[in-house]
Length: 213
Image (cartoon, rainbow, N blue to C red; front, side):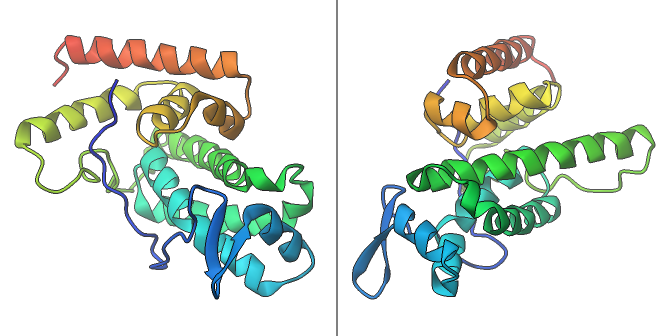
């Protein structure tokens, strides 16, 4: 399935990622600083490095959380919790160059908790939230009404998937992550990641063929 026409949104902090190719960016004067160096400096108590990690990846984490949760308010909470968790557990990161995937993995775990909580609230009839970050609402400006309608149908199909399958599918087809990175982010084997994506793909395509309203 081709990439969906979804636009990126800055986080509520207004921050913009300062990375280039995911690992190196010029964030302190003109000197390139790698993720690995940022992690080492942050572990040493360097506040600039800690803030640089946030600035570099806050947009990525926000984008992922919004799309998975479909709600900006819930996503903002996940973003804050993700970076708070990351700073506390930074010493557990075995490969500092894999910082981005590690952060997204923390975000996914936080998302799963939110999904369970929201499911319980819906069961009890206590969910008063509004889905304001659906694929249709996050779509690139200028899309045709037909394309927006198609995105809405995809959204409804995704809502019926098991959360693990939906997360894997979104990482692959919406966020554009490589299969290896999907597996690393969700914390499963490559084979399991492929199976989850394939299962979601089959159901989404079936729903679309059925012409679900």
